[in-house]
Length: 156
Image 1 (tube, rainbow, N blue to C red):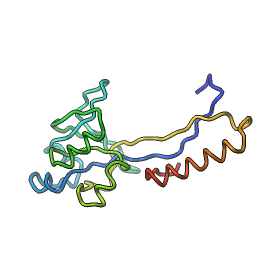
Image 2: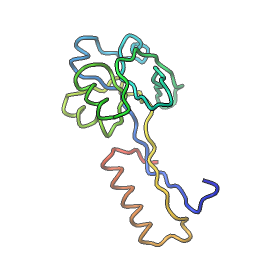
Image 3: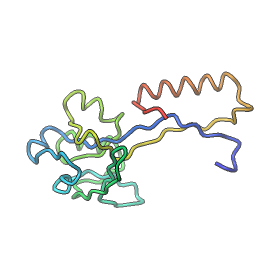
Image 4: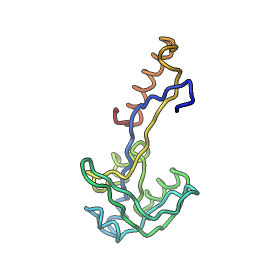
């Protein structure tokens, strides 16, 4: 932000997970490697900018790979995507914070846990540190800590 009086502070990163319902996996099998996703159907985010029918998967220290899937559903609403995955329509690429409670409850299964499928970096804009009141800094620090715990953000 070169023309701004504000600075951006990165609070953390929340990865996306590849997930499916146990019912879907019973019917179609459980992929254990990214290449095996080619034989499966996916739920895609339709963000009006792209109708990309691939997921970019990455593993720390390795090259990213693009995996094409057959689209079963497009949605621009994460809750629609979540509910479609829960009903067993297809495999989904969902944010950690949205799908983790369902993984813990056994309603979704995280596939290929060593792989991530993108994610969201959370940042905050604030006045430059030189003119920042101590109370502003305290609020930002508390916000960063609270968001990290609530959303499962990975520290930066």
